[in-house]
Image 1 (cartoon, rainbow, N blue to C red):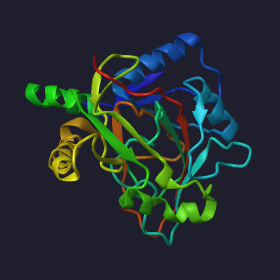
Image 2: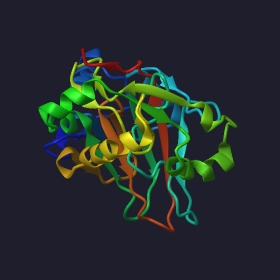
Image 3: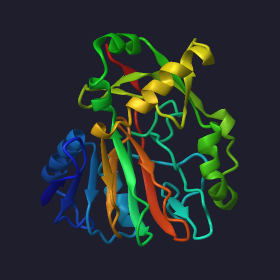
Length: 277
């Protein structure tokens, strides 16, 4: 196994593993330690069928179903992330962490690249542990006491789902999905603090008015995706990426109109976010 960092901040490519083969407990523990440190792992040059992707996902956690789309036949936990040649909007095309409008958002997301444009379609990641660390001590203390509302019904993110909902929607109402989480969450495995808000789903602070919430939120939204906290995944066919949804935001770029992009996504169940004590 060879590990190549993506940037000094976060992310790593993992070469030399065939994920169709069972991993030893020792190797899995080594990978999990690396993942908890780097937050984004990209397993290069894989050849996975859905059952094999699912088997690998189960070594990391319990796969979950996406609320609004049906999954693959026989694999309801695998969602197809698709943009067709004639479409101009991509699925989830803004900075976000996955489904933070759930009481227990996913701990991780696993995405496997099947069809890619000849150029473009990269994914950006931003480390929210580093984003928190870079704030002033005064703002740390302010944010530690805050909770934020997360909703599935934000217009910008809802627009990115519309084409896929028309094709494979579950008829689940987005308006029914909202949750309140600490603005700064404690990572359940490492204990590290990280910002746990995002532009796609966070609507405001609990018990604050919108006029009060928005100036601070917009400042934090800009801060949390600063270049110093980011890495860029330039996908290649058969890449499998696994990222820590508790610690990073991601942003799939929409710069490949006229080309198809198709990936298979699995999210892994997480816990209810806890504030730093």
